[in-house]
Image (cartoon, rainbow, N blue to C red; front, top):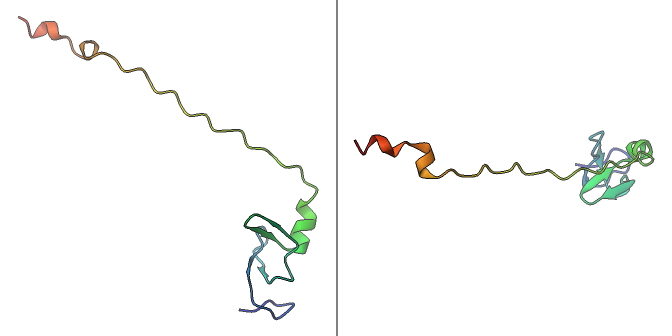
Length: 76
């Protein structure tokens, strides 16, 4: 497939609008994220939110076997 504006081969899509982008259409890249000119103009001044790390739930302490079952019942 070719880009609508430049008739060049498409290398990816804009992250926000989904437009097909050739190398000439890409306004900004952030790792593997591609942005077209209009979308990049909207987001370039937005503050970057930092994600807080996910805290793993604490694993419950394991009980002793004697706390799960009353073994005194078996001794009778």
